[in-house]
Length: 247
Image (cartoon, rainbow, N blue to C red; front, top):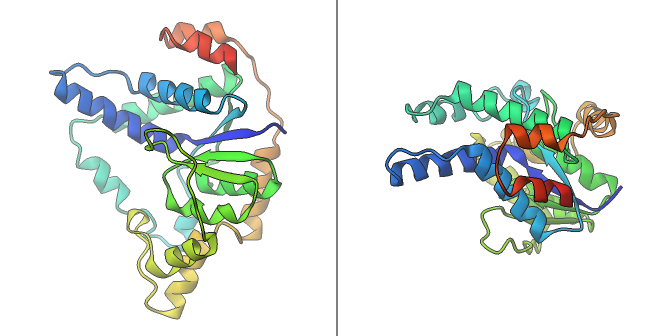
């Protein structure tokens, strides 16, 4: 397998829609399509790491972690609903359409599963031994730097510099004991909560059934009908054709 540039597509989606919203506010109502901003970001990332194959990973709608801890990410819905001017149904539909078309018509690979999260899929790639640069601002991935084949970069970094993670094991311990407010995981004040937290955040020792599912997703044979014309006729952005031909 080639060296990979593994991009957290779900994170880029949210970054792009809120960037589009800010632009609309600042430009008197004009909304630049989030698809343009998202694809432009992928192109920028590929320009920074041109020798790597682009892979997108995303979050499924029914994370297996919710079965273990029902309050996992429970605050996300209310957060979205606080933005009453945003049509989330339409945005998620456009998200799915773009993801499907990228997977079908371009050289970009997309790994997605209903019950897995992007972190799980990055962990699976990391453990496979393939050389990866993972693009995500999620601190949960810091622990994966115990593997010598893994490097991380934040999409929020202006110069897209590789992160320096000096002690990945300490990063994992911090997550387990301190919790994660963004994911609604509380501090581990009791041994039982610590055990739950470890199961939620430890990507190095995932449950066997989850590891098996990750392997199935990553090793699934995929039929691609490469057709850049179909993609660029749907998303008519000038930079796209040259970018896709470089992949």
